[in-house]
Length: 266
Ligand SMILES: Nc1ncnc2c1ncn2[C@@H]1O[C@H](COP(=O)(O)OP(=O)(O)OP(=O)(O)O)[C@@H](O)[C@H]1O
Ligand SMILES: [Mg+2]
Image (tube, rainbow, N blue to C red; front, top):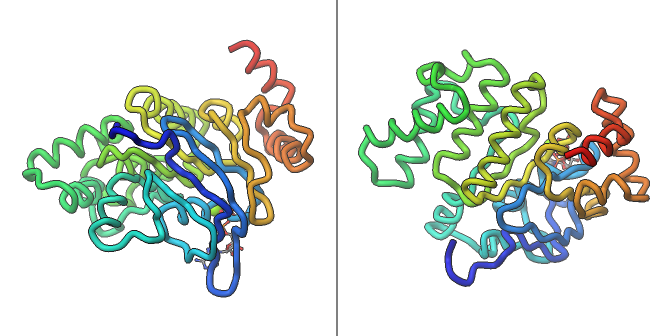
């Protein structure tokens, strides 16, 4: 870690973004601590993906400020922006791989762009990263030849290939079977605990939230309506928060009561 680094990886102050004339997030104030896992939750279309994209300056900025890894993301240009992006791994919902290239070739791209390493070392790094997500057997396959779960893991490996300080992940467990989802969660927790990475994960999967979340940030109508730990969320009287857990439990996830029991046993 650099000297004098802020304990916060994301510092958003009355931050607003949108597309064209439309403002999607109009007042987001949030701080995300280094070395933590934060789950971003909220109803469909409330702007969770927009929030994630805006932390790397991909959504037109309309007001307030957001500093990520100490940088004003909306002021970064050219090489400074490329250097910033090499410190952040983004895992897209569908993996985000180039369809005409093998998994190996896809993962080599960031290393070729950002390091001066020789090809054999780059390949070794890719093999190592794929082993971490149990994809060693898929090195030479094309994205179209992977299952949904394999695609997610390949996308995750790609996001991690430069050992970023911050990993942004949009619904990593959506569509995965419970075992694969649990493995991915365990990997995220290991990345935090062993490498000190910070992870921001958009999810509405209650099992996942229980396994990985240090904090929950809930968005609604363009701003942060809740920011706290899981146990604070579970005891919140806010209708938005209560409804979120009630709905999630109707979708087949454990109800709030059994979640409490499990939390108290751990
Ligand atoms: N590239 C874009 N251009 C214009 N509008 C967009 C764009 N991306 C998202 N939006 C709009 O912004 C709003 C928030 O979308 P966003 O994808 O951030 O929501 P979300 O919370 O991630 O939803 P979901 O849970 O369905 O993934 C939606 O009304 C959407 O139509
Ligand atoms: Mg989304």
